[in-house]
Length: 112
Image 1 (cartoon, rainbow, N blue to C red):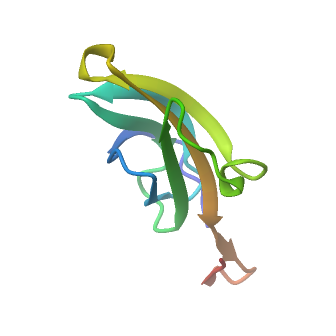
Image 2 (cartoon, rainbow, N blue to C red; image 1 turned 180 degrees about the vertical axis):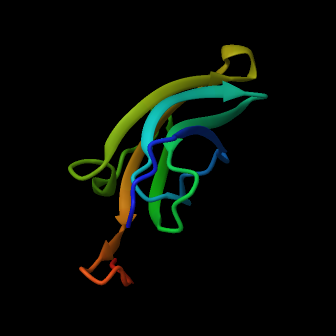
């Protein structure tokens, strides 16, 4: 696997649901979370040329909603946004579900 020196910033629009999976290029670095057109939008720095992918689980909860154990520990809080003119406030976490493992010959395996 070669790491590209040229990086890009990609946006990943999210749904306002309790839990969703997001596939991103391997090695993606979270940059920011904003509300765009009343939807959560995640921005990440990525290597646009990599074929390797990893899966993130995104958790979204409104203020006052319960937070499950899956959202603590291995999950990373990434931000708070508001939608609908500030009437609704959402809190967002990310957990890596799987990443590729590359052996010495360059073959890849998916782990969960």
